[in-house]
Length: 344
Image (tube, rainbow, N blue to C red; front, side, top):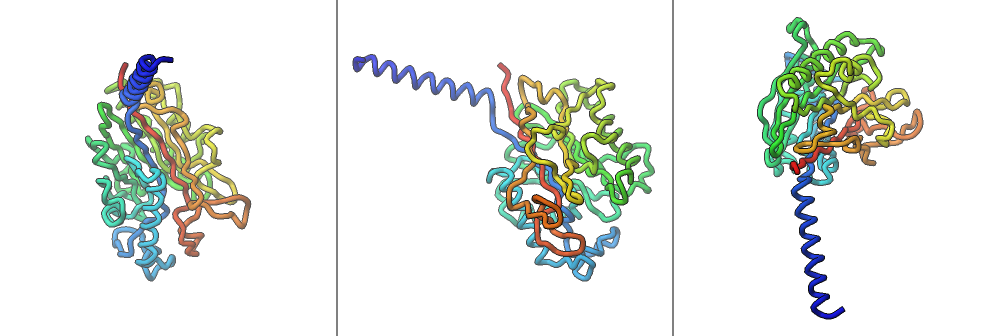
């Protein structure tokens, strides 16, 4: 090959490469990672006279102290950073958070302070005062509005569980609707509080349908600790295809995920922390999109310890009953990667 031909060939390769890179950058923009985490009782050490927080006071049954609170905050910071592969998630939703003050400690007094996080929080009616809330990065997304919901046919004074957090964000030139949940516990048996879980499920589905009726292009993510597994009747309320207003796909209901669950009870893993998306997120040709592989359980090694009573591993929890273990949480976080696609 002559010198001139070599030069032309090199120019051709460079131009082709740059064109391909430009096309990929235009087509698929920055990944935006969403994270949901039940943080297992993130309490401060101050007494809230309006809630039952006595066990998480220095003189309480859990022996909660300032140093244990500090270690908990440092553990959450480490988890969030690792979940984002050192570029922390754009949105981190939580449950079992006592108040705004503990979030401020996490966001403004750790290394997260340099990522521009802002807080969305409101005290819930829960007896213990634990709330559903989130933080989001203002350098990557914009919050449009938010609200907290309880079932409309429920006596507000008598509702003593967690509200559902609704948030609407703009990401690039698209919009996403989030509904974050922490449904009533199974404590006392699998049927305990099922009626209330089903009532909340119907409300969440109705809200999703309403968003879809207002705008058939609405992209919706429903996530949380549902205290139910994907096959339970209350979860089927969300994914029921008889009502075609808004079809929701449970990304957590997939045996190929790679891990057995997010919570371990008596030796059995359970998938109770879940992410559902509106079908149009999976089929979108522009704006925000994801696929089934975008969902994962964050099961990095430092969040797990040997299960000495049963077999295998279990989450490295903060407490085992009333015994302080010094770990992260009794749940594993779940992640969803969202991408932005420009139209052809």
